[in-house]
Every structure is written in structure tokens, then in C-alpha cells.
Amino acid sequence: MDFNLRQYLNEKQELVNQYLTKILRQYDQERELIMAMGHSLLGRGKRLRPILSMAAAQACGKDFLLALPASCAIEMIHTYSLIHDDLPAMDNDDIRRGLPTCHKKFCDATAILAGDALLTHAFHIMAQPEQIFEKYPNDHTRIKLIARISKASGIQGMVEGQMLDMHSHVPDHEDPLTHLKKIHALKTGKMITVSVETGAISTGAELQAIEKLIVYAEKIGLAFQVADDILNIEGDPEIMGKASGSDVLNDKVTFPSIIGLEASKKYAKDLVEQAIEAITEFDEKAIPLRVIADYIINRDH
Image 1 (tube, rainbow, N blue to C red):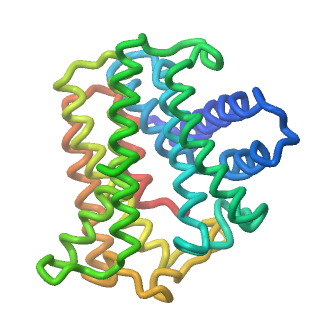
Image 2 (cartoon, one colour; image 1 turned 180 degrees about the horizontal axis):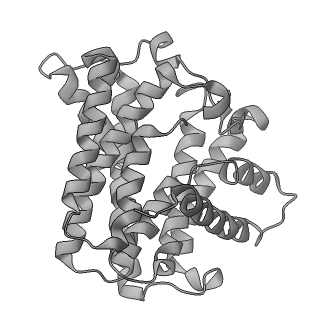
């Protein structure tokens, strides 16, 4: 299979970065709020979620640029969640994407407001994409996208997952592994799934194709978190751009802590195989999705 993943990722990252920069350049760069937003948004992020969104659009045989507005909005929402997760009241982290976290670079209050601004502006971008983007879905499709993304990022998705993760303890009536899967299906999985889903929806894909892509996304979303737990043990902080070993220090419930490190690696591999199986009926246009699935569990950051 002649496919250069590094080149594909670099090209899509560059495209996303170009438009994220364009979004922020609409405003006075000397404002502290804009500086704080840019500090976190324009760092060396993997841009995995927007790349998955555009790859899903491509897999449906459509123009992936139609997925770009929602892709950028999702990255803004993801970045807001990282800013807030890093705060002293949450995970209390000092480094993110190889840079001081937003509250360390500025202050707690500015970080909170920068996160708030990224979240709310993401929906403005989807509502009025013509200010930034050359191609975008029609009004009806954009309303559907806003509904899907707001659901995935809110009390039925990412925010609830973070809330459960903060409590850290496993309820007496629930199996630890089941509880952990529930946390990450919400905290990480929902935003990865909606990234793939919105890529397909943006291009007007058929329901049958969307359903198969959702199965793919749910599997890689969980595999992504298992891989993150493994990286927290084995990863190089210099490459990851954040500290390793924090899960053990904070006594967090993780996949390795429940089923062991080697079993976690096998579980992640099995999930990726299931993800690829879900999209077997797609043609060569889905090659990026298949290769990205493997990348998720073999990445070093």
C-alpha cells in the first residue's frame, strides 16, 4: 500500500493550522484573551480530530474541504477542554504540547476565559463559516453539525466524562473495567466519534456509510485512550510534550492498572483491528482512516 502517513498528517495539520490562525487573526493580537487563546490553540497539537473528520469526508468520496469548518471548530473545543483540564482545580499540569500550560503562561482567570472563548467561538465559526472558509455545508447541515458537536462535547459527552474522571473512585456496584470504559467513551471517545461523524455529515454522506464510520470511530476512540494510558507509563516526556508517570503518582484508574500493561497493548491492537473491519466495504479512499487507526496505537506522543 503506497501511502505516506507522515506526509498526509503534515499536509492536513498545516491546513488546519492555517485556518485556526486565520480565525484568531480577525482580532487584535495584543489583547491578552487572544494571546492566551493563540498560545494554547496554535501549539504543536496533533490535530487528530480534524484530520479524522477530513479523512472521513474523503472516505465518502467527497470534497474534504467541506468538513474543514467543523474540523476547526472541533479542534477549538478540544483545546478549550485541555486548558480547563490543566487547571489547578482539575489535573494541575504545568506543560501541554511542549509549552507552559495556559494558566502557567498567563493566570488561572485568563486560562478559564480563554477556554470559554474557544468553546463559544467554535460554534460561531460553524454558524457563520463564510467569514473564514471558501467551502462549507448548507444551513440545514450546519444546524445538524452544531447539534451533534454540542451533544458530544457537553453533559452527554466530554464534560460528563471529565466529571466522572474527577471522582476517580469506582462505584461499588460497577466493575472497574466497565466503569473506566464508560469514562473514556464519554471523555475522549465522544469527541473522536463526532469528528468522524461530522466529516461524513458535512459532505451529505448516506446513513449506512455514517453508521459504519461511527463504529470505526468508537473503536479507535477507546484505543486512543488505552494508548494514552500506556504512553503515560512508557512515553518520553520530551517527545510527548508533557510529563509521564502522572497517572501512577495520582493513583488514577487506568487500563494498565486494571488489566496490566501487556494486556492493555493487546486490547488496543484488538480495538484497531475491529475498527478497520468496520470499514472494509469502503474503497481505497478510506486508506487514510485505516492507516490512522494503526498510528493511534503506535504513536509516541
